[in-house]
Image (cartoon, rainbow over all chains, first blue to last red; front, side, top):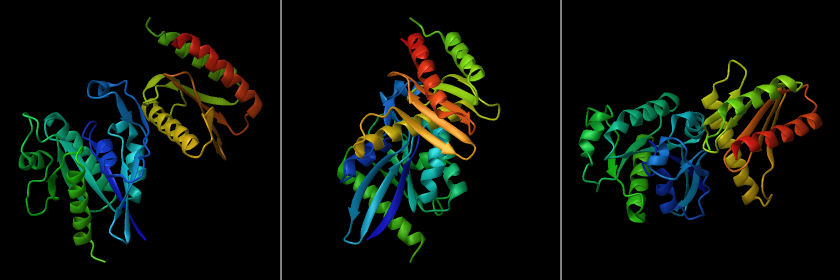
Length: 179
Length: 123
């Protein structure tokens, strides 16, 4: 059995923990604590170490999903998790444009450490204030449609939608590093 | 009633200066923000706080998954000293950094005392 480790990252409240909870076949290992910083305005609980979920992908591959904390004070966890990863997905909430710059910072943190395949998952696209994925890509600094990572809309609460994102990530990863 | 942060800081300072071989201490929220800290100069409050919260939450999770029950403390022993995390009520985590010369029995007793004192300020 081959194990593929995927990291789910992104700003606070992008839907990382929900993403993993939605598809994991095992009970998710979470490390949620009550939020006391500005996170509390968005949600009650926040991840302080990581989330872990597992998903069987075909007969020969098991996917291990690791969700990072969103706040940069936990960047030592970003570092630990990305070093083990085979690919990662950056989740970005389409309706919170003030976080795009921060999302870009997370991506460059990851890219500085590892050169691994990544895709961008855009969440909260059903919100009236949601930005168009094209524009989000530009805001994140991916100007050239030829070279930018694949972008996919994700509803973190919907199993089919999350599964689609994961398939896109695995496919992208296989295309980028053919074995 | 508001938490008396000056009191928390003075308890920590007293603890660090009065206890032999203790090099630093911090009181942090379970989601990793500093409440009060007296740390060696090279260490950053925010980072230390986040690490303490991550470690305690993982430790508690390990206790649960591997049937070790509730966690009293988490103990990191390196060749240059100790890092000891103790839960301090619902809303705080207490981290103590001590040198390798520290006597563990004394350390544990002193930590227990400090935690009790800190708890009275936090309620």
